[in-house]
Length: 221
Image (cartoon, rainbow, N blue to C red; front, side, top):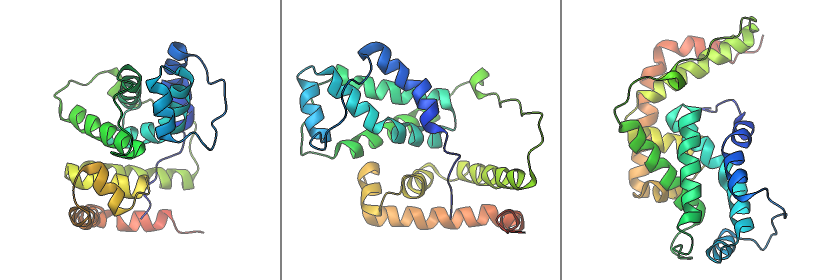
C-alpha cells in the first residue's frame, strides 16, 4: 500500500523553518562530519555551540516537517510546530541526557504528540485552512487519476481513529519498523501490530467503494 504524498517538502522547509532558524543563528558554515553523532552535536549545543544546533536542525528538519505535515495536512501549522520544537532544543540545551533515548525517536515523539494535541484543540476555519485555488491549466488524465487516489487515501486516513492513523503514518510514510513505532508512540510492539492491523482493515472498508477507481489509476494503458 502506497500512502506517499508529493515530495516537495524540502523546498517548503527551506523557505519556511530553515530561514527562521538561519535568521536567528546564521547559516551553517561547516559540513557535518561522520563523527558528529546526534549525541555529539547535543553535547556541543549544551556548550552553547550554535553551529552544532544548525547542523542538528539541518539533519532532522525535513523528516520532522514531513511527519507534522502528514498528521496536520496544513503547511503553516506543521512549520510552526516543528520550528517551535526545534528552537526549544536550543532554549533547553544542556538538559539532554545521552543514552536515555535516540534523539530522532525523541524528536518524532514530541512532534507527533504536539500535532495530536493541536488537532484536538477547538478552532475556527482561517485563511490557512481554505483550500488553494486550483490552477486553471487542465491536468493530464494520469495526473488527475493520481490526484484522485491521493485525495481518497487522505480522506480515508482522516477518518481513522487517531492512534491507528499515527501508527500507519509512522510505519508507511516514515518507514519505521514496529519497534521504532512503539518507541515513538510509547506503547508495546504488540499494541502497534494491533493498531496497524485494525487500521489497514478500516482503510480497506473505507476504500472498498472506490476500489475500481484506485485500480484504474495505477493501470498502464
